[in-house]
Image 1 (cartoon, helix red, strand yellow):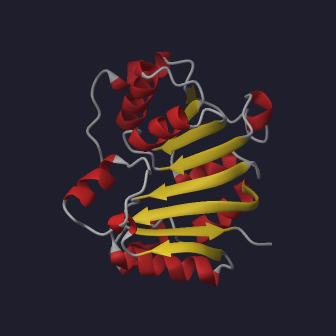
Image 2 (cartoon, one colour):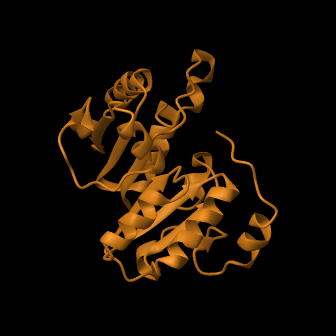
Image 3 (cartoon, one colour):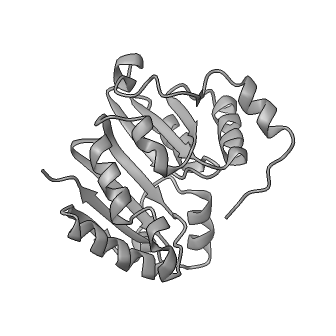
Length: 209
């Protein structure tokens, strides 16, 4: 879903110097440049509820959010500023460009409530399509993992098959993830779905040699 961009967004992004990564110079050097032991990447971070909350919870990990909507990036940065979060950086770009920013240094990727692109003709745009999975494999460290959540059963079935066909190991799965209480930090979409009683589909995939 495209977010309407406010007039203040572009000037805010241009002036912001701390949180927004504006070039590819950190590629291969993220954990050398920041004092953290692991790097977790959320692709499509939306308004930043999950990634800002996660960074607050575990300050030993560097969280990076990738998001192509400028308004979402700006609002996520404001949340990080308000909560004085230090271990967070964001990139204004889409998943097509991740190889420009990372090189086998990511420990975990989050794919939360990605656009399902329901038409068969648009399958290549799904973030779990095999061409994307090949890119994720290149930026994940050995035994790195992908945590996948969606409310869309068709996307879930499609994604399971894509991961397995591409040689990923399925480590965990649930077709009603919030049936039992957990302490996960939820995205904005996830909160709405749970309140409506919508089951959340969940899976963890490990990168295999």
